[in-house]
Length: 100
Image 1 (cartoon, rainbow, N blue to C red):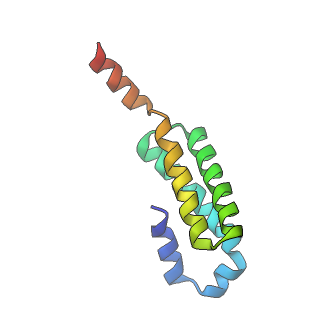
Image 2 (cartoon, helix red, strand yellow):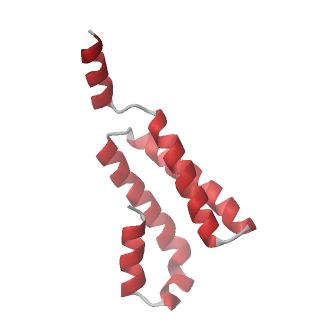
Image 3 (cartoon, rainbow, N blue to C red):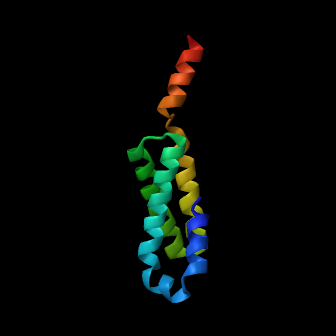
């Protein structure tokens, strides 16, 4: 999901834009995509935002040591690994109705 807005921005805007504003645009798109993920998967918003920030921090650390792409992969992996921990309210209700 994160790749779609980045691809659109990459085609629509020049490389100079990203050199000047990428530090701001990247994290904003990251958080917006995490909000969309929360909505689609019905995961609590606060938990998804925490996971997005944790992924972002992990990605930043990896990026500072290696490359931007490695940082992006690390951020996505941390985010993806932490989101399934919480069961959505709809899934919890479905599981409890099947068990009774």
